[in-house]
Length: 287
Image 1 (cartoon, rainbow, N blue to C red):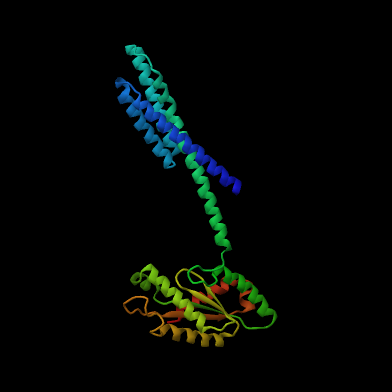
Image 2 (cartoon, helix red, strand yellow):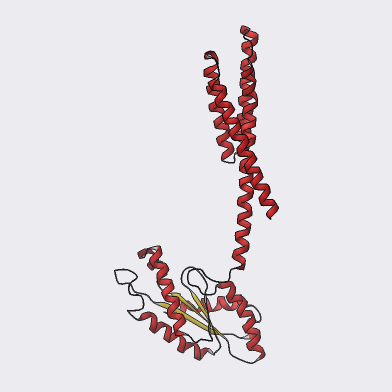
């Protein structure tokens, strides 16, 4: 990966160096052109910039066609003038035959190096995200951590004949809250909700932030009946007026839906994803 990144930077450096060289050469060609060739030199430089622009937007095929057509049209024009009027071809004319393709090639090289760097950065970002186990907003463990821990906990509780339940807490009026709250206020609400849920559960219970909308999952080492007591504490904490005070100047109503289910080895086996989805389906019954 380091070698590929170094190659990408090298392509960028060489490309931008050659591009600046071709632009400088075209500017000098226009400045040093005779009065009779000033107009055609200016037109050639503008056409050169058009080809460079297409290459910059990664339209390499169009850029090459524009540069090739520019060279072909200019060569045909100069040959026509030579044979029709006997006007000799000056040295500066040869510059305009070389510059278009050189400029497009240098821009393609620069964009190619930049694209390689962007691709490598995207790969690194995906790899880092796969390793991240904590939600940045709430500081709680994320969905990936939940699945990993569920696999371990289900195996442990099954061996020791202990109950294991999963609880999911979701904002009841999530779309409406997003509409009336700014992004920063909504994030503050999610953070406060995560604190309330953390304070309502036991120390040995594990809490997870499973999405960016404030949904929280809790792994509890208790049966279905025990989860009902935890759910009642969470709902009582959320319904308190002081819980979300200070987020906005206007009063907002925050309520949650809570669903719980006890893990059953015979029903779910090792499929923890299905188990989690079944608990989410139970949310619709909390009205």
